[in-house]
Amino acid sequence: MKNHESHHNEPIYTCPMHPEVRGNKGDKCPKCGMNLVATDGGTSTEHEVDLQGAEDIKERQQVELSFRYLTKGESMPLEISHEKKVHLMAFNENLTWFAHLHPLERDNEVYTVLVTFPFGGKYYLFSDLKPKGGAGFVDKKTITVAGNTNPPVESTALKLTSQVDGLTVKIENGNELQAKENQGINITVEKGGENLKDKDIQPYLGANAHIALVGTEDKMLIHIHPMENEHYPIYAETHFENPGIYRMWVEFKTSGIVHTADFTLHVKAGKESGGSMDHGSHSH
Image (cartoon, rainbow, N blue to C red; front, side, top):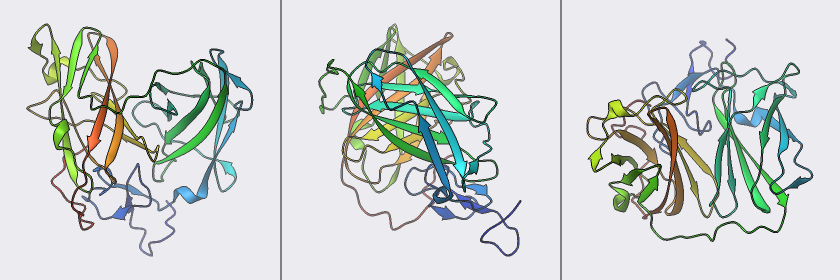
């Protein structure tokens, strides 16, 4: 394994979501709370993503998007992460529509995906991937879809309870979230008046849930995965860099059905963390 910064072939520990964050084994990312992972030191500045098929997209018409993931101008071998090589998360501009897709690898090292955008307007496409032997990174692309169908009206009102498929999903500590510090997100799931347990949540794409958060101001993605917790069937830890309003989607599986619950969070201003990366977080 080639190491670009160490003279002793020691691994460099970086955040899978924020590769610019580096530290030591056992450290946590101060931005999202994830464990730092060993890499060969490659950075996202060496990578680029070539998107084809986004030039003439119309609302409500299926389109094939093609992605080439490159490093230093050459095709980038990818590792499987949470059962897929690429997780593509798509959002419309006012964050009322969300899709979690998985482009398929073709023989020519191009990844393709079929998608139908329901409204005209601007969309954000986040490719979440991990080069072999390198740090994971997220690439953001912005596209425009032609059409006159308006999306649902954006609501910035606090929403900590979501009803989906006969389930009531709640963020129990949603009023306590603050920026600049690592913290837990406590999620309960209720069915027929009874709270589900951790054992009732089935694995989905290598985790018991996938959580996507996007700030309404910066439109940047936080993609996190829960960890085991004796009190909540879905529990995750993260770090909000900035206060403000965030849209949040939680994908989880029960009885063979994948559910998507959506929320709107109001994250308060918090104290500066001082850069410490150890806040007692559990493993992701």
